[in-house]
Picture 1: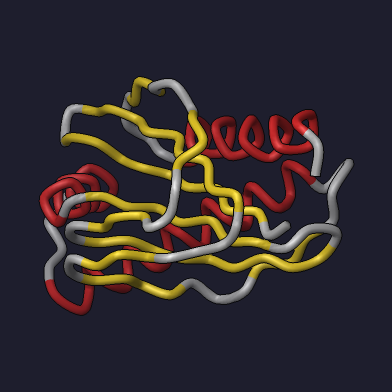
Picture 2: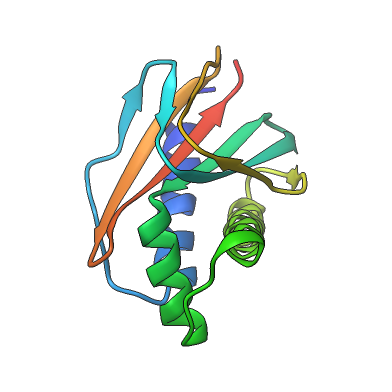
Length: 147
């Protein structure tokens, strides 16, 4: 995959976050990162297949997820409800992303997998991090593309 295609995928993901997330976020510099990826609290992994294959991963703190759910639903979610919310958020972001890039790249997304707790994710894929800062802390989005 060439740099222009990678740029298209990352730019589509940035535009998606700006459209779907209803709170102000400041995007930090996107960059390539090495495996393993470190998760501290909560995340969502969504695989995609088609013209390209890879994963989208969204990571944030428990507090970020709780405050964000409060912003969207006017109530703070916890436990299974918070997990469900996080999974659906990952699904909304990934579905919007797949639609946004569909003019040049065809992909289908798999159901979201909610990741809880501290873990390391090892991958052989090319991994790109796009961090966002908001009033609740950092929201990290990873675009992983299999070679």
